[in-house]
Length: 206
Image 1 (cartoon, rainbow, N blue to C red):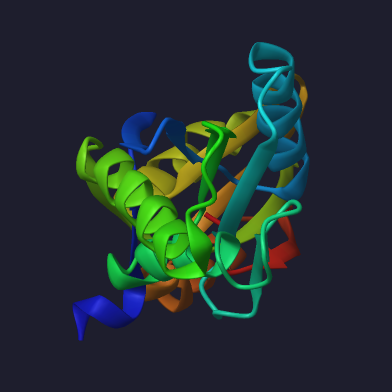
Image 2: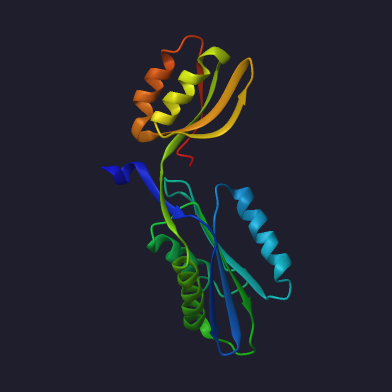
């Protein structure tokens, strides 16, 4: 099935805004590829909202379902990070993070009120974004001589591979993500090119 070869993520930033009894919950959704991007986005938001009392977040990375985190950032346990992650998962997204910045309004909302606030703000932010489907890929480093460059790039294009890095000198090095759907055929054809070496970098990386 096609679904086994693709994953859903978001194409750009989305924002949500929920208010309850004076408290403001500002949600920010971002597409992310790694933990460093998540840290950078969180730090940028903390600089943008230095007076906010909480910066709660959740994220999910990769396609095996095992790489995720939910943080309540000082809110009662389970009242913030878990509802945020729940919204990400209900949409079937991965490579997505959502941060909800809270400004306290002076009235305690209780755990049910907080769950509703964080869930609603997140849902609004995720509802604003463009949803995209991308191939699940395995990343390889290809090393080859310049004369066969055209053939290599043609095969990568035919396989709908993503080229992440390339150094096309007399001796060429290309780092590319080959979709799992076309991997077997593509690697077979690449292996037949004289002088080309193929080294796997990582699995299931978009």
